[in-house]
Length: 185
Image 1 (cartoon, rainbow, N blue to C red):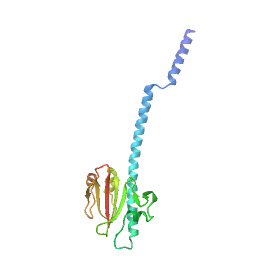
Image 2 (cartoon, rainbow, N blue to C red):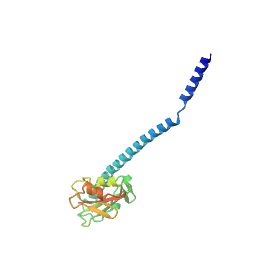
Image 3 (spheres, rainbow, N blue to C red):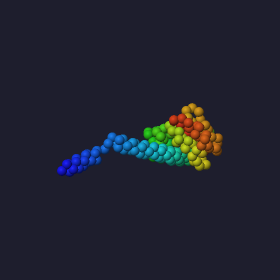
Image 4 (cartoon, one colour):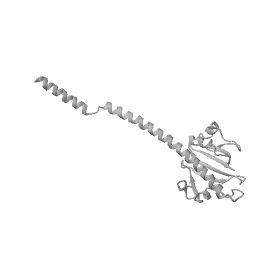
């Protein structure tokens, strides 16, 4: 009889231990969950920035195409600016706010006639370092005369027909907020 009582008591103690999670087990579960969540957030941030760079390139192509369409019958680009492009209703509404154009990084997009008026410039501001570097070295085709990247007031300008190298672009885009100016024919 004593043996039976001891066996029952042991069984009850075993069930009580099996019911709960110890503090050590809980800490391990939370640690593993934290590591997984950190990995997911890093991946999301990386893929989100890559998507914004792709959207910025798409925007740049749309702005370039819109300017060329608006000024197709003109001999130069006199009077072109962001308001003219924004009011053309040729850009997706998600990029336009009134008469201003915003890039996917929430910076501004400026459009202007270049010094000779036979060219126009498109500039994007508020670009993070990695996006600036990727955008500055992107091949946009034969219509690009030059590319300039800047962090603050100093700009690194590519000569006509030349493009920034990845090393030069990385140096030029060294700040937290950078800008790029494309000069188009």
